[in-house]
Length: 361
Image 1 (cartoon, helix red, strand yellow):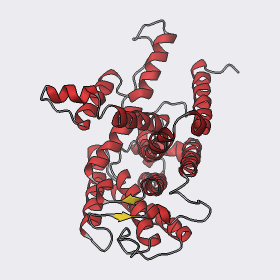
Image 2 (cartoon, one colour):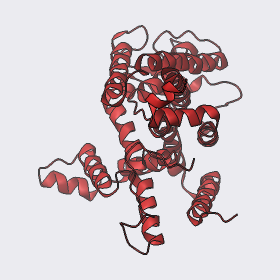
Image 3 (spheres, rainbow, N blue to C red):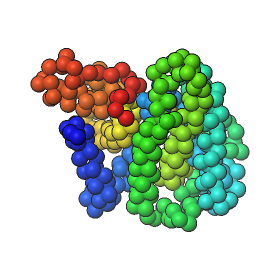
Image 4 (cartoon, helix red, strand yellow):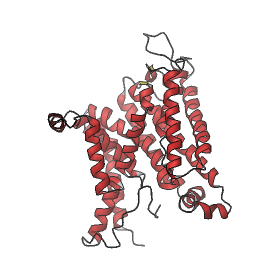
């Protein structure tokens, strides 16, 4: 059986990327490992939860940041202990870190199922707005209910980790490899799920919900369960995020953070799961190396704004114009041109709509 050259190339690239990430602590600086790569892996997991819903369920959710933050806030309230240098706020119950971790993830999944059940009968812009409403409610809840958090947030969370996790404060490589392992498991889980009967029927619901309903499939139930799975992935990213930054505040689940995650997913490409981490890496590199660059100064001198949002907005616009499917879509287009001898109109170079997914899953 002859394999597709594109598939072989992608697997080679993927293998090289995995090897690089495994050896990153000895290949690059500590700054790159802790700030760039660890953050990329964590943000990529959150973006993967969004892309999973968009690509295989036809649902673009703006609630994933709120769900990730929910896990972080639950963990912070349950695991931390108050009165230590004023760092810890919230309930500060001081529960066992392992139990707190389990409750944070399970609680987030239950909330995700609840959200999904409400939004499951909506589609398109209505689904988008309902999930945005969830995000806004979550932001104001943690911001105004001071016993839970308040706008000062909860600090010192990374000092209360399960014994099997270890010290996240002094051993940042440990956190990096945990984030790497979780990212690999999330990617593998999604690739497995979409091949199961549930995953295949979910894609049928995405493409032909009326026909699937007439065939006896429970369309709202499929969407609700998919939302619950995405909530689980988001919860993992939320836990890793609070371990990475040591704290969580309402700003981490606010509208700017929600839009940032959507930008990450769109830059990477909403059609394929790989786009989650590609978009996260691009977004983080832009934030770390262009925010204070000569380009920022140039925009400021021209009085057209030199903020990070201006720059990321321009880059985002350029990517969307050139490739509506993001950077992964750009790769597909370039490969299609190569195979068709440069003829962009040839059958080998289709441009799929945003949110669509290749039939080969």
